[in-house]
Length: 251
Image: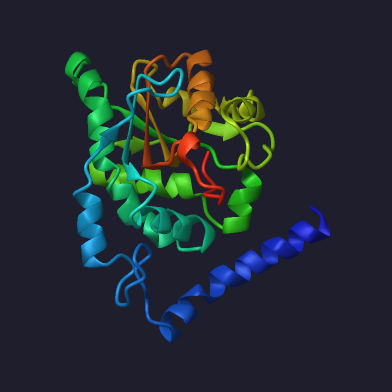
């Protein structure tokens, strides 16, 4: 570990440790609209839960179905950025709960044809270890856990990053695919693999769908390891072609 990394980890740890103190000093604000009084105000929570699911008509390669809660706009963008970049992991609970509708949408066709005992499995897309250390939490795992609580589905950390990946912001679709090539793999633990039936539908969970490159890399790793049924859900969709110049941190 380098000195720079050590200092960065120390600063992140101090930020996490002082967060409860700051909550006492400053009034809590909605992570979506900024209104005082609650981490996620009643109006924004209602709008989020009523958003339902928006299927992606062209799912990423290797993914049989994909859906999101809504577009990366109208406060959903602010909520996701607040979760990831402003150190408010508690926002993962309402955002993850809202994934129940997209999960139901992508799982419905499979459940209609599958045996009753083959329940889908929620698998968070693996976060780069350096970014996880920087934030002090894994946002995709938190979202998956919250979605699991809302749906009753099991969450398994089946995937991992095999190497560091350069930031994807500013890269086109093909460059993103190249950057993520062979960067995601199924964990080698035999016990972990044994927990997940190869006949089960794997539902990948992430915060933002942009180009689909992360979902494609994850689906490829799962397919190589023997899981043929893969779907994906994300909180927000921000198609690459429509993105403004400002960074969203999406993949």
